[in-house]
Image (cartoon, rainbow over all chains, first blue to last red; front, side):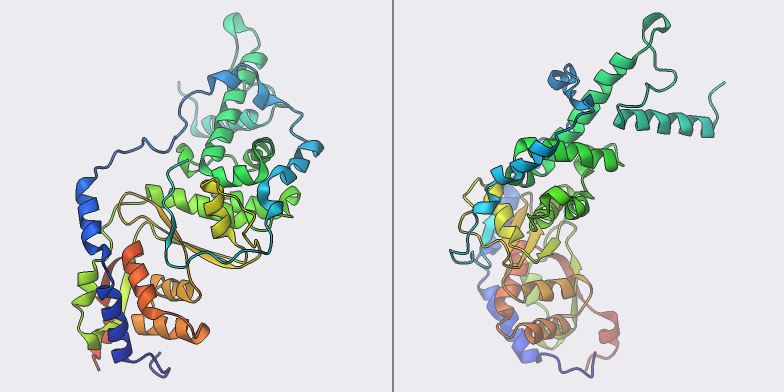
Length: 101
Length: 267
């Protein structure tokens, strides 16, 4: 690696200093950590409960799976409507903090 | 006398095979009252297992389900789970192979972004369940003497994941999970996604050009100088301060240290 020309120490130091000076998130991160408590295993279902409803119909044992006609329903998805218009989305902004679905 | 180990194992594989395949008879030893057959009873059990696994996949991959529709998703999930039943009793670990399945599943070949959307969803849940760790504090990085910065290496945070895509999988994932319209997304625009969990909430970011090269290099053990040089070489517009700032804010790393080889020769 040493034979390669690496970025200079001063450029790195400047970048790190700039990154940290822009770090307004410091305090908020700390306070957010202090204010929350963790609750294990409630947000995402492990699905240990019995699927009693459909379990009585034997829908899952059908030998005739969704066939031909069902594959056509791909087009029901919204994906094919995506066009070439519209700009790219923001860069370093958090895109989402979505909740467990 | 309890059954021998090989006998038990063969009984278990017979049982799990019958669980997946409705054409197989109930496993030996499964019977109704007074020794009657248990075909229907076992079918109910098989159905419960199947539906539960499909429900788990739908919960793990909500964006994929929204993109193809619920009916299609459930039909596809049934085919997938017959090919690749869970290997863990913990269902939230299921679906690691779904992306590879989607890549070769002909009916979705027109949706080239679907495998990477499923990778993002799987990474999201892996990050959610990853071990807790404090992200690297900005002050810790700030305390490193300027002349040592270049030789720093970083320890990846247990929740940090990256998905690099030839498609707009990150935008599609986010819009789909947030139920936003997809019309404005250009699906074949390459995107890099970063998944982290600095505290208790999973975060997904769309990375600017060059950042994925930079982070990937650091995650695989390159020094700060090596990673920055690599990213700048591949992407002249790469914004190093912004990337370092994002790396601290997102919590990609939990610690930094001077690489051993470099500390022996500080100059």
